[in-house]
Image (cartoon, rainbow, N blue to C red; front, side, top):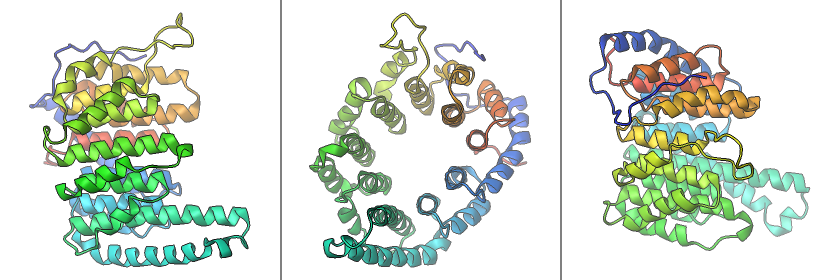
Length: 377
């Protein structure tokens, strides 16, 4: 197990030393090559993760990757590429995004006709379910198109997002809420608040709770601290007393994204390992909650959680292979928030070697994140 004792007052380094700069430059090119290779991987999940790293790449390389990915055969890849196109303000992608939007809407009209009761009863259950999945994924891609077009100055009809906020699928609603929160337009607040209060099917209560939390974060991003206080209170309540671990982790991560400095002291208390309530005598273990707290603190320049993150690398050994990959991938991303810290760099460099591809992509993304303010010279 790797563990480094980090001072409780550890904070972001603003002046990386020469050894740090040399080390990170030596790994940066390898990280870029890995990302460029991964965007062509046969697994769409790998392509999605690689495309997300474009936000930390050189603009020319990022533009080429993103504009190609908009045409990907998988909807989830197209959606992430469109979000990156918006974030990076890649106006060169406007023709492709506009064409894709028309295609997706045409597909949706066709699938809606086939799913009308008089038509759907003629289809096998398997076929109906496939059409519903295609429809939901197409609506998600449409959300991405509207986001990319809006942030690149197109006159796209953003009011369509209001309709997508009423989708029967929580995933579509969540993505619509997420992009509205990133559009930097406070006029969307009433729309998002209405979506959070929308009555939904109780059978999907967990996913709907996630959407409500996403909506609170989106509103908090668009408003001042005072105006969005009720939403911040919702996030804090979920961080402390949510019924599920997933919601607690999402809420804690939202605190970091919002730079909620009033929560720093509480986040520090969350770094402590938790006991298993089903086995009180067992040794406390690290959970995703501690990693989320360390990540959020680091985003606010407080590095108290670095020891927790590094220890998490060793604790992955107790997990079965599929969960181990997910765990280490998250660890790899979190390390990228510890700017200028040699211990974080050493840990992320280790993850770049002999690890499963998703973990190496996460590590490569962190290396690019750690070095984004360092010139190539």
